[in-house]
Length: 296
Image 1: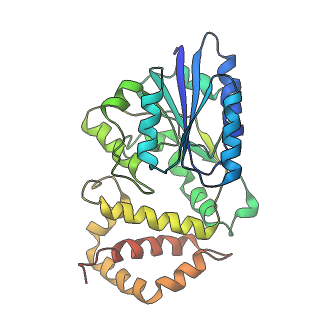
Image 2 (image 1 turned 180 degrees about the horizontal axis):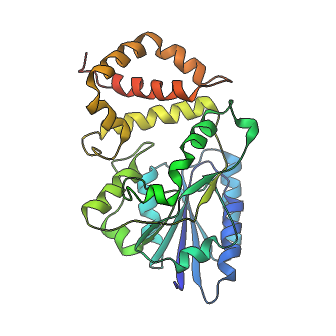
Image 3 (image 1 turned 45 degrees about the vertical axis):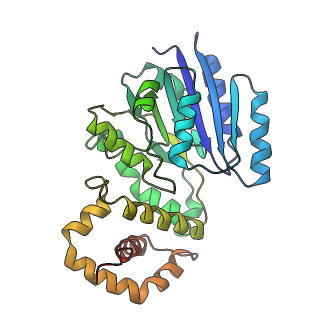
């Protein structure tokens, strides 16, 4: 049973007050737990979020780190690890909700140096057939059960909700070349594999409950695909999209031509009010292939 814990929350333009309050309430209830909650604001630009974050330090055991400039998803997690005072670090994304009152206690009891609890999807029927992010996550949800994740423990890892020993992060920090959205967690999972550090998967999800508008989600998706293209050599074997393009070169040639002709029309559907997840998969493939300017 762990008796000390640093809860680390990186955030950007997100009011995580409720998340902090819920985690604080659970931590206070643990017998003899020494804990801290550190929130790192990575250069938020929305005044209302900045104001809400500033109020967090009025809560006991809570500290706010404010960055004027956005340093990126990898760097801000490394900052949090260095600032933490305890050996056990629990990273939680700021846009998540806590699923139940035993969330912290399960982590405190779980064995392992790196433990990933996963995430679940809040039920929001009104978003079905309207919100692309929600539709995408609902389709992907069956792959999030721990038994599925454990089949490829280092590949099916995300930073939304995981516990790690501080000295592991300090020895193997997140690669800060991953400056823009996407894949810093995938590459860190690969680092763990390369260094023979196991990742344990348990059933202790946080709840994904905020789903951005379609246009914003498409921008993030395209940014993530550009990141994948930039680091494609280093991420071999850790991306199903990369695997597909290597196995199906002829089909990818056809999709490239399709994307040139119809990519803009596909995107209009995807940012609209009735998006298609099938079209989303096709668009992602076409967009990614088209990033390779040397291919014909």
